[in-house]
Amino acid sequence: MMKFLVDPGKSMKKLNLKNWEADYDAGKRKEDVEDELDRFSSRMSYLQYKLFAAKSQSLLIVLQGIDGSGKDGTIRHVMGGLNPQSCYVKSFKVPNEEERSHDYLWRIHKAIPQNGEIAIFNRSHYEDVIEARVNNLIPKNELIQRYRQINDFERYLSENHITILKFFLHISKDEQKQRIKERLHDQTKLWKLSESDLFSRRHWNKYIESYEETLSRCSTRFSPWYIIPANFKWFRNWMIARTVVKTLEEMHLEYPKPKIDVSKFSELLYYKK
Image (cartoon, rainbow, N blue to C red):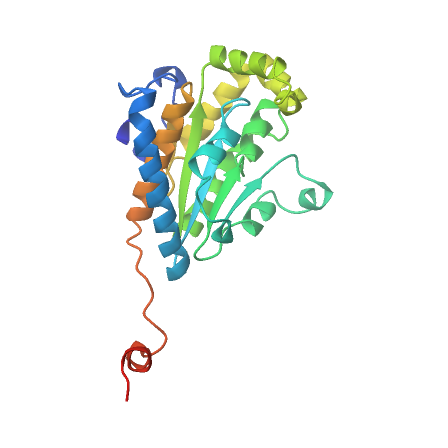
């Protein structure tokens, strides 16, 4: 797991994504991980039930990545087995008029999971530093403040029993090109193409630099970033599923104690007078 973790102890050291292999596969093959993915899915479902029953903690999963990196696919293939009763996906697009009238974290805080829930953010509060840097939306001194504010915000959440998992889906420029081509030639995927795909393609280097800055400054002890090699979709799914299961296990979830004296039911159901 450490290979994918952005070292929180080096938060001010500039990260270079060229040093992280987008096509890394840990020597595995697609067929090797299929059975493991099934087991992870089953285990994740069981642990979600315990989380819901205990209602003492919650889990926030943040998915970030350049257009085409596979955020939607990750949700579909990794989290598809979760019970929607206590799990939801929230997508953050360009802020609307009401959201712009508040501070930039207002809409994020509204979407934080309650105790017992799992929330999956398809994009997140990190759009307010990624896009802000690429498009020069705010002065540099405000941008630096936002990195600190986000770290403070996430620390606040973690200290209030909200575990945060942040995944950056790392694909290469060539892989993004191939995925855009596939969308162009697939009638079922044409609808996914947008101006943002073209913009991210034209400004690839700016986006990479912005992510490098963000990953460097906002990987902390209480909320670290994981850089997930995502050129191979099956490896991306396996790695994220494995990390989610491990994180849920480390919460040491316990079922709550019964609210009633169960012996009374035993007497009623199993013993005749």
